[in-house]
Image 1 (spheres, rainbow, N blue to C red):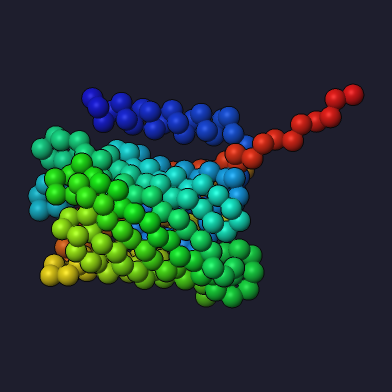
Image 2 (spheres, rainbow, N blue to C red; image 1 turned 90 degrees about the vertical axis):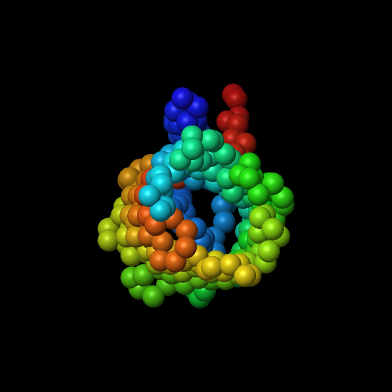
Length: 256
């Protein structure tokens, strides 16, 4: 019942924001683990809402409803990022998983900003305590991001590291995303990503998905299938939506 209530709240949030706020252009960046070298426009809020994720690992099933990422354009080329997931384990316990708060900044404008050349960005910040046993500490994560284009493909490369919540061990992080536009409103996407903690088995996974941006809307729907190549969940199916809106004050029309 608790998970159903959270799902209804997430759907209500989507409806209110789409109806009440002016639309803004955005392709969104679900369902990836990695990210791109772009940020939200100044005073713009972008919401990445994963309304369903199903994981299968060693014969056990885990549901995540919902996952949420908030991106707020604080300044030109700088955004604040907050994220968390609400997860129901095979034992029917509900946990807040992977909460974090980050700052993302574009260091060099390029193809993602409508200019020539590579786009470069960094993202860094604290990993907040989780309710999962053994993850009640703070951690840290920082990555460098490179985005470019080899027509018709767009690619994004992530490389970084951090400190895990569990045990405070250092960890290396990497990821590569590819996008292939097959039409004005549809993109086929793929990702390979991984992490390697000291004295632990590496985790690597591959994703294949599709993004659909209906014409004349600020919605981007996503559907992805992820397979664990080494460590982590064996299979994962995820679906979600991304939308954005401006929080800038509207100009008042002068009265006569």
